[in-house]
Length: 300
Image (cartoon, rainbow, N blue to C red; front, side, top):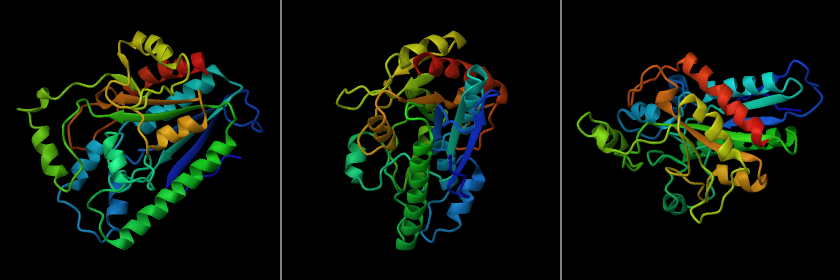
């Protein structure tokens, strides 16, 4: 049985096909580890912390969180069950802002390992109070325990999609206590076009050592289905699957069944503005979701 949502931890909902047997486990799981995209998510946790937070940290939150991913996840799930009316899909959206603690990071891994893999730390460097760390670790553990129960509830051969969105450009800014001012400088109109433009859609299939964990045929399926919408699908050009990430753990636990995908955020919102709240465009989501669902059906 799929577990229920937990307030401030994660939203869980199941989408049923019109002919689905509700005693059967879901055949698709879509996880959105960076799904805390609402300013209310940020405020709820920020107001509980005693640590002094950098001025303007909410601006970093707007860049750092995966705007559009929750809406796209639900739309992909709905498209899946429309195409497979005898199946069901479960969507899990984290409500824990990665600005404070990251639900796509293992917190038992040294931060040097994460940085060596090119990914941000599990806990924000501005979190200094012991009580704050305890609170964040408790929420992180609650999310991981919930996901363990969800993974037990889906079919053993279920397709698993980890869905993310990223900002349009790769800016050379490290996550330090200066991140707000560094990002403002990086996204200044006089500098922004100097940063590399990211792919429209990217599959994270490889580790830094070159091991491939994407399901066989998944990248080609996405390139064919999503490519038909006019978007380019790249394979591990910007990001990899390094040690210390939950995405790699998922892939290792379910070989050949886990796919990690990034979608460029400006393809899902009305207007891309750095460090500002963004509005998801339902029309753009609706155009992309069926193509991703079709690709999942090809390889799954």
